[in-house]
Length: 146
Image 1: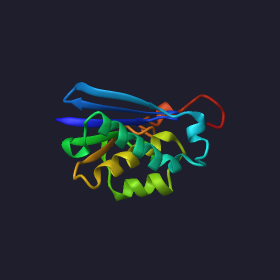
Image 2 (image 1 turned 90 degrees about the horizontal axis):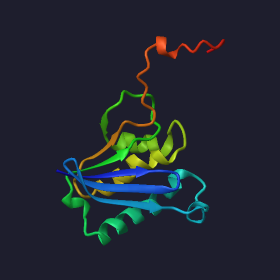
Image 3 (image 1 turned 90 degrees about the vertical axis):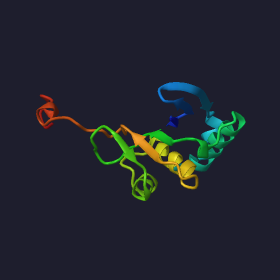
Image 4 (image 1 turned 30 degrees about the horizontal axis):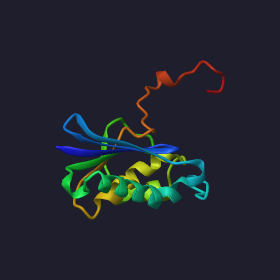
């Protein structure tokens, strides 16, 4: 089983292809401040990063249709339980139009969706940054008003 993994960060996009649990390809795509300076919002970087991923994979001889799945770092959704989530139109709409917070990780599900939607490859996001599994007692801080 071959899976492409995508981890978008503030100044880089990390990609890797795993064959089962073994990494068979890794690449760190760096984004300079100049490269990103003309994007007003993180979401505006989608096409830019998508093209870089396509070009990088193509240069390395990989095609999305040859993969079994694409998995991405999850973005800021509503609080959820840790796990793996299938990316669908609702996830895409949330990341594009109503993320909880603007962050580069919001691009993860969008990049996975865009890469897979025409290739009939399933797309997932894993353990989004908004995972919330705290019990009520764990929320008690000891600070007045909290």
